[in-house]
Length: 348
Image (cartoon, rainbow, N blue to C red; front, top):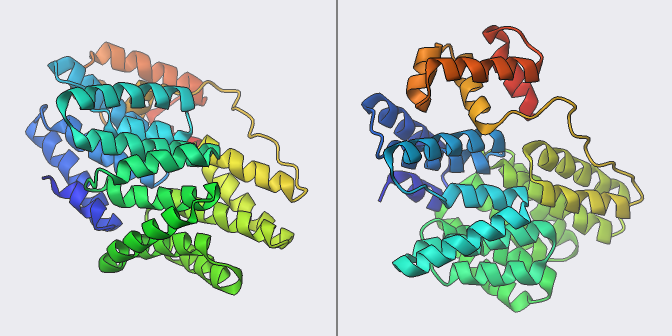
């Protein structure tokens, strides 16, 4: 077992980030094309949880390019997680169904756990809590490394929202055992948020505040944004509209910026219920970069030459130059020197 999923299962976001980053570097330096896609997938998962969906998408695309070039099977784990967090229902459901079919044929229980987790995230975002609860229960039935603990989080929220508080309370009990043992801000922050969902009055308020304090100190931005969201939802139901708007605005801005569109729509709907009108974020007039263009732009921004970019991405230097020209046009810049700032600004 690689150390990266173990770090994630221990809710150690710093070690998870460092190990996944090191794995990519070592695989690149060694030219290990069999293991590099796996390392890229692990690193992409870190980016998903850090709320950098653009970076995750680029790494997934690179991994897929390598597996295609080497004739190996594509790795779908992180792709499925990313689609679920984006709230891309049609694409996510198609990939979930095909993954379940393949996993059943292979007898691969971990993939079934992932499918359940992705289903739970997807439908919690879309506010279809019965479907989210079913997905979370499926995932928790597998007790897989990583996905089981993450799925307990989804089960608590789906259980509370769908009216199955017994299922939510049981999931919280299991979550408490795991997260207290981990003791990290990621673990204890998500635990506090989950407890708040089952509490009332001052106790709930205190747990929400603890969740925000702890999650602000770690890399797991997706759950910080969701903590703002559920706190805002609770505040609105407590008739604390001004406080609710503050939390919901933060949630909406964070979620829409990272590309978690379904959760962002939840926040927008809650803001509307407080009497505040929030327009859907306008799509930029400039064209969006493709995943391949993001990869080329990132490498060029790091100082790589076209031949170096081509060698890493299994494309010709001329193709790298072609992609870079399209990047300059789309971003409205004229030099490699401007790339890093332009890519960073595009993510916000």
